[in-house]
Image (cartoon, rainbow, N blue to C red; front, side, top):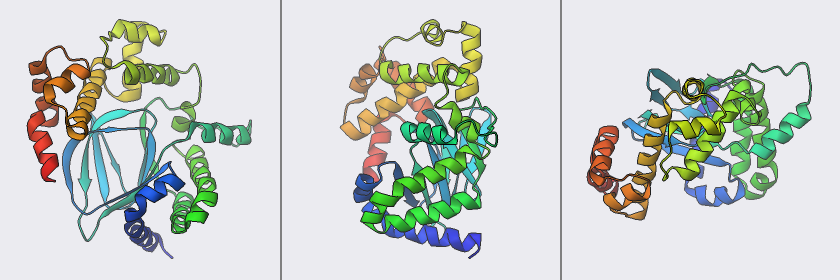
Length: 296
C-alpha cells in the first residue's frame, strides 16, 4: 500500500475512533485523536509539549518571524509550553486528521537508558522548543499499528504503550532527536530555560521580573534573554503576558468567569489594561470571544 493510501486509511480510522475519545483516554492517556472538517483562521493558541502527526489536512504555525507547516510529510515537536498563532486547513473532503502524543518523561528516560552509550546514537543538540521533521515511513507504520490496536480496548491497553515507545524511539533517532533529548538533559541552556517556564506555569499570577527569572536560570539578564528567545522564539515578558492571557481566556470560556475577575486571577492589576491587551492579542474583546464560543 502506498503512502497516500495509508494516510487515507488512517484518516478513516480516526474518524471512526474519535467518538470514543473519552474511553480511549482511559486506555492510552498520552494519545489524543485530532479530527475536524472546518478550516480555522489564524488564531492565537497555547500548545503544551507533545508531538503532532497529521495524516490529512495541514496546519501552519506562526511565532514572530518563524513560520512552520505540519502536514502528512512533516510532524511537529513541541518540547515546552508555547504560545503561537495557528491556521488550520481542513474541509469535509480533506479533513484534518491526526494524533497528538504527550511525551512521557519516565518512558523517555527508560528508552534512553536502554539505548545507553551506543555509538550509533549521536543526536545533534537543539535549543528551540518547537521543531518539525519528516514524517518517516517507520513512524507512519507505527502510527498505523497504534490506531489498529486502538480499535480493540484490550489490545490498546496492553500493546499501545509499547507502540508509543517505538514512535518515541523513531523521533529520538531522527532529525528531532536532539530536541527530544534536551527535555531530559540537565544543566543545558534548554533545561535551565525549561525550569524557568515551569516557574512561570506555577507562579504566573505573581509579579515576576526578568531579573528574578534570570536568577532562576543562573544567567545574566542578557544571556537569559538570548537563551530564552532561542527556546521559545519570544521574549520573557512577552511569553509571560501571552501565558496570562491564555489562562484568563480559559477561565472566561470554561469556568464562566467575568473578564475583570479573570484578569485579577492571572495577575493583572488593571481590568481595562487586560481588556486592551486581550483584544490586541485575540482580535476581539473577552465578551465577544466568549459569545463566539457559545455560538460555535
